[in-house]
Image 1 (cartoon, helix red, strand yellow):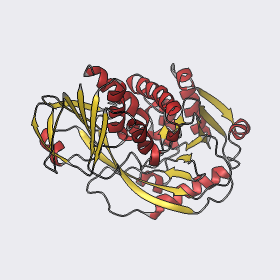
Image 2 (cartoon, helix red, strand yellow; image 1 turned 90 degrees about the vertical axis):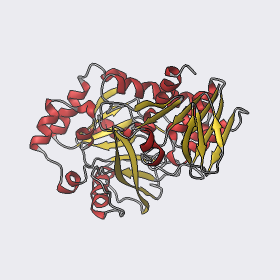
Image 3 (cartoon, rainbow, N blue to C red; image 1 turned 60 degrees about the vertical axis):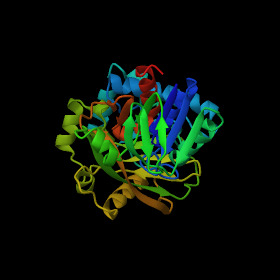
Image 4 (cartoon, rainbow, N blue to C red; image 1 turned 180 degrees about the horizontal axis):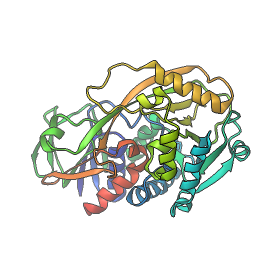
Length: 373
């Protein structure tokens, strides 16, 4: 079987991985020299803790298994089963953590409520101020800036894999057939369009009523911390963002303890992961209304710095990078991904939202199973 994958980000590359693993001949086309979008501009988190129960959690848990399996074969992915600590500062945040612990699927996530002393034993870098922490054993991380490169190098060892960068697919010319902007025609048994937040052009032509929106975020990365940060870290604002934490306790938190004006205005939460070089990736914000700003704003960075320094009990290292990213999200946010046959032999897979890095391996596996690769 011949498969054409359009898109070099993590979702596209995982589709290529699945097809090669199943013995198929794969051509992967990327319009840039390498992917430059949301697949690189994220935390690299394999984030199980906040996922909605049911399909979303099952997808995340299966993806985490696949990440670990692939990471054992491709060490350059930087996979590590680091777990996470969501730090709580108030009684109402603690009540939300306790409600999460009472979920029927709490054990599957590896939830455990820790005192501040116990949290510091797990992550000694967190010497600052907080009351307790919700630990999630199943959370993990990879290196987002290099994961696709590492996967690509592994794929290139197969004679069945070809990577064609610097080409944009412009037209579907027939069943399983596309033409790129070099004039080359690529014929296959299946074409999978994994174009991320690129929702115009050919995607708009093929799916004019696509139930997917674009979301913009701001993030930053520091110089090396100078000590290990053994777990990923989140704050109580993440309770407001992730569906696993919806409860009467969350209603009370939102009613009695609103976010700071900056955090509320930018729909913020703290997520933080240490990179392989020792630096910290820190974010983030959420912007939904178009047109998006073309610049980044300092107030969200100031807010994040204050929160992180409060947890660490020390100043942050120098900020080395700031960036904005855009990802595609299903307008029905309960859906893990939008998967649609748009032409004979051509499928569009998009809209995982902030779940893309987490769920990509399982999303690709499901596509392969549904298409009987």
